[in-house]
Image 1: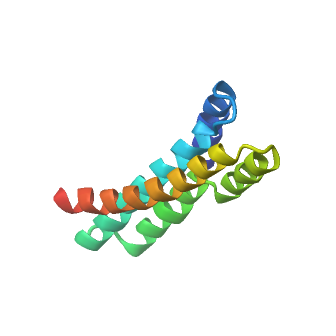
Image 2: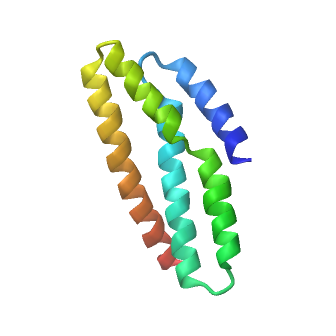
Length: 111
């Protein structure tokens, strides 16, 4: 399900904005938020088993996010000489991903 949802989001959004891989960016950072929430919930609650956490984290979030596509898009930006967009996309993705994992864990502990 995660892979299908990623495909739908990224193909729709990547086609709409030139030189900005908005779809891949959004699925990757949303996947970070979801994974943070899952990890936080699994640490806080006993009703969420390790198997459920792995299934949702590795299965859904792993299928929803995509490091290989992110890497290819970074390579394309560099190859085409879009250094500024490369730096923005790479730095923004890494920073947003880190912050959203932390936000997800924090949010899950607030419930």
